[in-house]
Length: 185
Image (cartoon, rainbow, N blue to C red; front, side, top):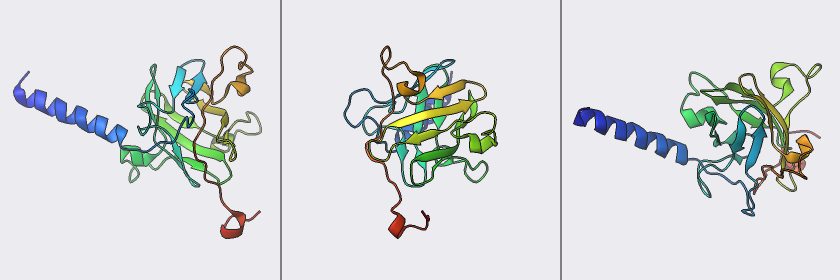
């Protein structure tokens, strides 16, 4: 391997690490391990993969940003801004302002991951979705990856809390104020 090839690999690797760690996150505010989702076919998905201030998940009133990490399937991008692909492939996990998530995440190894049955218009046959409780920041519900299966965001969804207590909790959850919002209630 030439010196140029080694240098190029270092630059690419450094860019990947820099790009991945650039996003802000607000997962697991009590540092009690509330950062894991579970998929039977994939294992654990970490919403705080590089620790505090790393590249993990963050949620605004409109959208999720950042990354999830799976040791078995790699990085999962929650928004096209992570991959600088919005001009060619516009995707992302959206928040309706009240904690109902929808839209798609992307993984090079899993493909598209849907956060709501409304994405694929399957609610009449398979009703699923991911929610965030605005008061507690606790996530719950299911996402679907055609190449990875169901992803659960809380042990309450799997009735496994007595055996395996897991879930994702966000430090701050922004919800719309109906008085000062364009969302009518």
